[in-house]
Each structure stands twice: as C-alpha cells, then as structure tokens.
Amino acid sequence: MMNPPALEENQAEGNILVWLTGFAFLAAMIGIFIYVPTERTEGVIQRIMYFHVPSAWLSFFAFFVVFICSILFLWKKDREWDIYAHASAGIGVVFCSLVLITGPIWARPIWGAWWVWDARLTSTLILWLIYVAYLMLRAQSSAGSMRARYAAVLGIVGFLNIPFIHFSVLWWRTFHPQPKVISNEGIGKGMDPSMLATLGVSLCAFTLLYFLLMGERVRQEKLKDEIDRLKREKLYSS
Amino acid sequence: MDNLGFLFAANAFVWGGIIYYVYTLRLRNRALEKDLDLLKKTLSKEG
Image 1 (tube, one colour):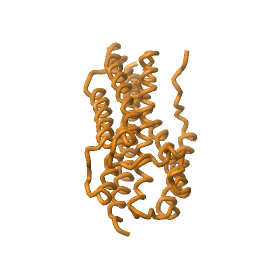
Image 2 (cartoon, rainbow over the protein chains, first blue to last red):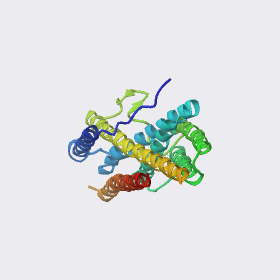
Image 3 (cartoon, chains in turn red, purple):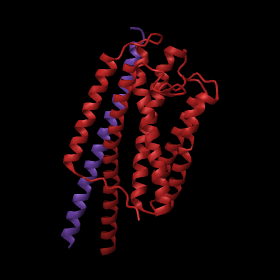
Image 4 (cartoon, rainbow over the protein chains, first blue to last red):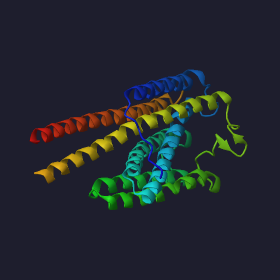
C-alpha cells in the first residue's frame, strides 16, 4: 500500500528551503530588472511576464496536485491525501488570483482594455471560480468524510479545465498571445535565450515557494486535526 | 520607459500578495500551536 509523502517538520530542512527560495527570488529579480533586455515592441511592461507566467505555472501545478491527491483520497480513503489536496488548493487560488490581477495590468497598455471576454481569460476566471467554490465548500460544510469526498470530486473536475485553458489560444482567435515557451517551433525556440533563462529562474523560484508554502499549509491542517482530536478526547473523558 | 507605473503595480501586487499570504499563514500556525499547547496542558492537569 502506498503511503502519503511525509512532510517532515525538520527545522534545518525548512531553513534550507527558505534560503534556497530567497536566493532564487533574488536571482530572478536581478534577471528581470537588470539582466534581461527590454522587449522591442511592448517595452518595459513586458517584464510583467516574469511574474505572470510563473504565477500561472504555480497555480496550474497546485491544481494538478489537488487533482492527483483527490484521486488518491477517493481511492485510498486516507485523510493525509485530503490534507494535501486542501493545502494545495489554497495556494493555487492565491496564485491564480495573482494571474488575474497581473494579466489585466499588462493588458491595459497593450490591448487598451483591462479585460476582454476571450477564451483564455474567461476559462482562467472559471478555473479560479471553481477552486474558490472548492475552498468555500470546505469552509462551509461540517467536517467529515462526505465533505472531503465532495471536495475531492470538485478538485478533480476543476482540473479538467486546465488543458482547455492551455489550448484555448490555439483553438480560438484570442487577444492573449500564443504560447512562447512550449510552441510548435519547440521548447523555448520562440524566445530570446536571456529571456528564456530569466523566465526559467523565475519559474524555479515560484516552484520552490510552492513547496515552502505547502509545508506551512500542511502543518496548519495537521495542527487543526490534532486540536480537534484532543477536543474530542476531552469531551469524551468529561 | 513608458508604462513603468503598470510594471510597478504588477510587481507590488505579486510581492504584496506573497508576503501577506506567508505572514497570515505563519500567524495562523503560531495561534494554532498556542491553542494546542494550552489544550495539552489542560488535559494533563485534568489527568
């Protein structure tokens, strides 16, 4: 039987991750504001890409973890998987919110509008709403396995929107630019190498941040579980 | 250097969002740790 991955509460490992994440973000900031050249047509505003794309990547990755952990929870009925799914969904919603904030800030000077109802933007908004609903479901309904099961189903269904988001710019004519990193020309062929390197560092920094946040969120859920267990124990003993 | 304000705004939102999220997470975890300690002490006193 497969056991859920154990997130060790090891202070030393946590500190290493904090330092690594900090260093990666410092390198990313140097890349974004010093190293990388200014894009010819869009100017400095294009540098938003180095926050916008990694935020999108992180949210998709977080929702992928929700998808996998939800499947494993429904299969194994192990609370650990439910904890991981719940923790990852919260992180995903935070970074999907950042995508929906930085996108319009980038769009306003380039498209002349904060928002257009095209396929990419609308499907991303729908993704955000699905996982906000997931978090509301978890917050509103009473604790128990039924809540976890409903949430797991929503977590799985919500993820099915992500391939649709990715392909939306290829299937329909949209304002949103076509993929540059993974395109028909190959991986990273549509970008300047310095831009690709900076984006790569930024993606690494955001991915490390995900694991850091995941450690904190999982710890939070486990603390809540422990408090609930002790409260029940106290109730039964009195 | 047009649109520098937009770049600054996006940067501020991302950093502000991340810092606020990390801060609230840490704060909540600390509060939960205190609750847990208190509960453990109460339970051990009650024997």
